[in-house]
Image 1: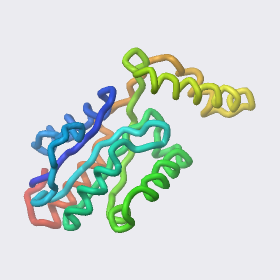
Image 2: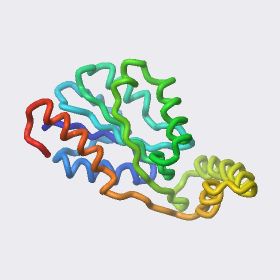
Image 3: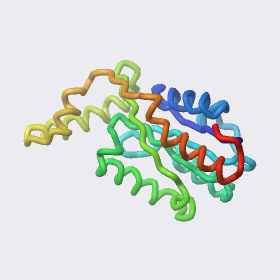
Image 4: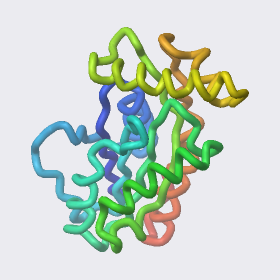
Length: 189
């Protein structure tokens, strides 16, 4: 199987998932921060692992360009967020709506979406991201005062470093790769 694992990471949680997935698929992950062209031509599938910051998916335009140039290649995107976007449907819908507005419709429609838990590392966080988090904290504090449990959980974790990465969360992504393998008649991973 010729699967591509492509990622973009700011603080390491997304890269950790890319490394784990690369090991499982016997392929070296490709960092999208490298400015080299990364054609998808010839790949059985392309799996992008991308971080979410303030409901914005990093490198989504680059994914669109690569996917548009290779319409025959099945595409998956695994988002990595501190929030559990599998249970936080409002947060997930906000991310997907922004992606839908950014990506060409034919590309968006062929993406298989997965959502992974990441984390926050306040010690390594850039000033810009700390300021964004501080603004969110202010809003969440107001919601927590009104009894919003999710907002209270956010406030409880504010300023702390947390890591929710879990290799087992990649299983649905591996199933996607296996299903592409089965369709192409390759041996399973």
